[in-house]
Image (cartoon, rainbow, N blue to C red; front, side, top):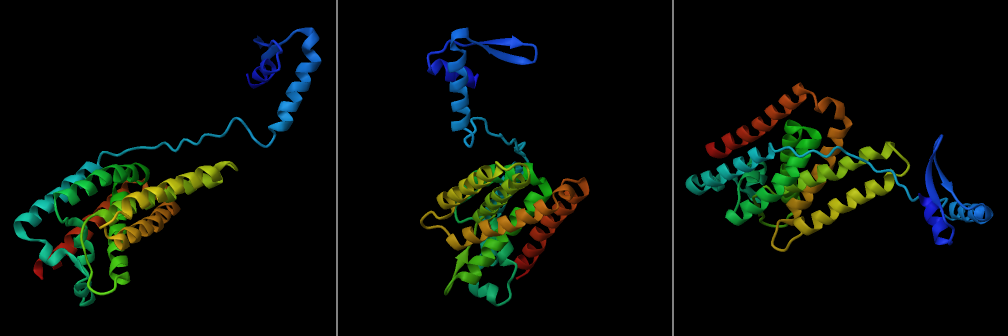
Length: 270
């Protein structure tokens, strides 16, 4: 088909017909030499610029289990409105410095207002659903949660003076980091994979800039969550075959539950 377009562009009539071993171009006898010359020049000019590129199919899956996470942060927002969970749960740098480590975890579940909650719920539902489809429900949930904690830790360590932080945005940025690093699995598939990898990484970086560096947001927590997500995603890719087993999914789910309950136990007791 490519050759027929080349010949037509040179004013040579060409018809594609079924042959014994594939297809053939039928051209007038008097145009044979000119047709061969045009095709040879076309192939020489495009030797290093293939028209056909390898297309990678990642088997992208969206897991609707992320709706459960949206429901969970909504429940915590309701509880905070009625029982003032923020008193012992917000990440306050001075309190963490005094040993109240649980605030790094509990702050992920708290939001300032309904707008803050809705924004994180919307983007988290999408990105966490994609991460769950790639890594499994348990590993993605636990990994994204730990990335959110990493974001709070990054904000606490990098802040100067008093710093307060709350919200699941670090966890959402962690999901984005996990999705960014997973494009590296294409590296071993083909020599043409480099463009796909760089394109995937660049897209996630641009999304981080758009979502994570907005004015008035906790940039340190967002950056820490994104970086933590990259490292956690790389660790999950290193054991890619194991994390999709039911036992691994169950253990990761148990880890997520414990990392939610235990910090809140200390927060409420304090």
